[in-house]
Amino acid sequence: MLAYVKRQDNTFGLEQRPKPKLDQDHVAVIRVISCSICGTDVRAYRFGSNKIDPDRIIGHEVTGEIIEISDDFKNVFSVGDHVAVAPAIGCGHCSYCMSGKTNMCDTLETIGFEYDGGFAEYMAIPRQAMLMDNVYRLPQDDNYTKYSLCEPLACTINAHTYLKIQESDSVVIFGSGIIGCLHAELALLAGAKNIIIVEPSEDRLKQAQDLLPQVSFINSSETDVETELFGITDNHGADVAVIACSVGSAQAQAMGLLAKCGRISLFGGLVGESNGFIDSNIVHYREISVYGVHASTPAQNKQAMKLLEEGKIDLEKYITRRFPLSEIDLAFQEASSGKAMKIVIENNNTDKGDNRG
Image (tube, rainbow, N blue to C red; front, side):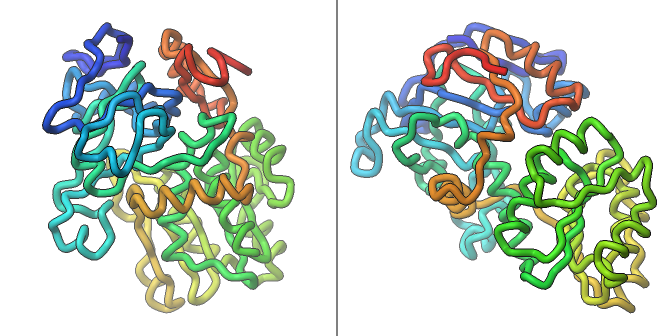
């Protein structure tokens, strides 16, 4: 089968690999329908990654159809079931797993990192993923591709469990990419009073603006963000700030925009130096709550699926382009340009064809 692999020299490329089979550690095989490209994938593609072992098939935002299932799990799934996989797999035994925070597992293993991922024609499901309930059945649909975006939505849901947005809140989001937009979608569902996205790129801003007409946008390269935001919020400031980009200065700027008792989510991890962006006196005197967030739990992935199934969030509109697996290098080049909201790899025999603009 065709698969996209991290090579020994820290580059990535298509290779022929044996089709996976059932064994003691892998209890199902899926025909991959779709696997979307994540920002983490793009960073690994551009700069390499010491977190991914050589010869690993990458891709963790995956949907597929079960074509083989172990006897151990035939009472749970059947051949022909369409499924998605929450990629962060806990051990089930540590204190974090026991409390339901499997994404904080002491020995967390992830599809596309410790296990072969979804940029392939077929993917094996690890036994541990089944045991930890990371595999979930999708509703009957004529478009399973959109469910590959459940995982990034689940990660934003994880952040919002801490932020507890209310109808009276003003929410500012730094970054208008797919993650920033998903944070805005959840804030809209919560009924937030004001939702503002801050973005320095006019092209990216316009792209998000077309998708989220209910949201206010500030072009930080042309407008003073503080003046604009305090004008929108009647000088109150933001009750909630989300840093949906990997920019330390955005963390620092957002702190100055928060109202008293505000909450801030440092959603975007920083590459390299990460010290000195948070003013502890602001935290102290304004009683600010600062939250981190990493990955998501199986329950949050299922919650994301439910939001799609019920039509409360439309993830289809965020898919900029679809590419067949054979053109995945072109897909990564486009994703690396920063011009696409979300790019999805679809196998040639999927329900939606090879490549649509």
